Length: 115
Image (cartoon, rainbow, N blue to C red; front, side):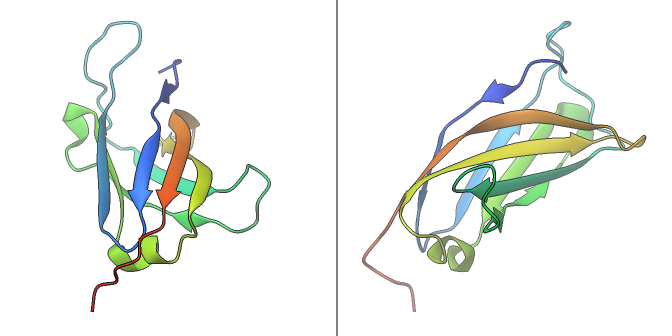
């Protein structure tokens, strides 16, 4: 798991957002077995920013290496338009933390609201 995958995202405020990532072992090119792992992901304006938004992050099927992150429409509505950064970390059973995905997030403000 040495390589960190870079993927840039676009989130429209006030909408439901979901993105999946499939992780592979960088040495063997096989799907990464995430059995026993947990996952966390956060959006911030910059690394030292105290303000943050946490993605809802899950590992729907650990043996397929799939990680899913998302925001509800309410959570995305709380974001201001602009450029952010995010990353995704996985934590194994021994509490070893590994960053597996990172990138920028372009948040695009909308004008129509739901409800």
